[in-house]
Amino acid sequence: MYDTDLGVIYLVVLISAGCLTLIYLLFSEMLDGVFEGIPLIDPAVILSFITLTAASGYLFEKFSNLSSISVFIISCGISAIISTFIYFFILVPIRSAEVSLAYTEESLGGQTGKVIVPIPENGYGEIVIETVNGVISKRATGFNNEFIDYEEQVLIIEAKEGTVYVKKYESPYQIKL
Image (cartoon, rainbow, N blue to C red; front, top):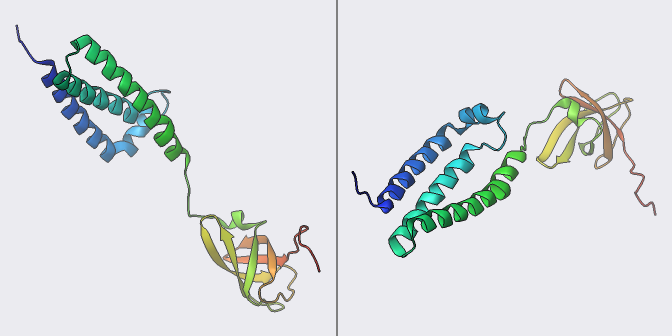
């Protein structure tokens, strides 16, 4: 029938899998929803497995004297190991690291901040809140309409309509001299 060199087959599979990987990168957000309910089927891992198998198979066919079956088994083994590392050390941490810079007013309640513009009685000042995502500056007023001086530590009681209602905060762990 046809006498095709296995190196050519590995090369064709390598190019095809590379093209599919590129297409997957472009449309991954849409395709991830399709495979979301099926455990252990991740297109990125499957494509990396096929690509790595074809690449190592091609190299072994060209540069070694191993039999074709040995080349395929060794290539699959190498690919399985590398794909496992890619999955557990790259894909899983990236997918579980959903960090958002957004915050809601409700999420500010209970946090502490520092006054940067003094808050007068029955008036407004400004505080800064340090979060893992950066520093947030908010308009503030005293919860009981009390005066709060510059650089005082405050506790946010509630936030609504862009204003946070705060009280002076003294940490139970502060050492008073």
